[in-house]
Length: 206
Image (cartoon, rainbow, N blue to C red):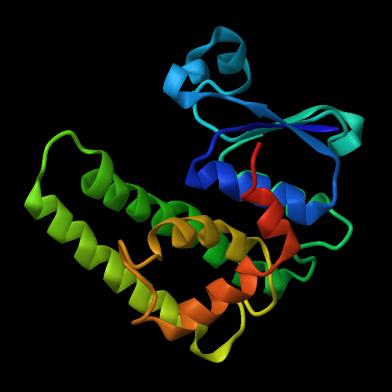
């Protein structure tokens, strides 16, 4: 049984989506960020960076316990561990998946979080920052939309690379924020993933 330390953030939902796709047994251990539970000394022992998500797998490589933080690392690990792998064996396919997995983790989510901060959470209204991240987000969406113009999923077949970008699209792709009407390929991709049973479970109550 894998423990998933979770809260309802974009990165948290990436890991929960991954676990639901995997078919592996897991349980959610909530880490209430509003109550600052991420700073509990017991939690800091498994993630000194006090972020979520974290997974603890008692049946890791060579039968040893594996502790992983960082959503990209979790996606890659679980995608390789599951029977119907979402992280490929073939080295050339790995290259294609890796570049989009790391893009999703390092750029797509990072920019989305900055957009979300200045648009929603910032205690101060900073129009210049709002304009900047709105432009950067729309440029990023145009790039991804172009990449999806000749493929169903971002790395060809459905993979951890798609999971790495889905949650932020789910949050900011509605018409209140960026919207998807100007990005038909992202909209098709998003709707296809949204229909997966694992997604419906992952975004349900916990």
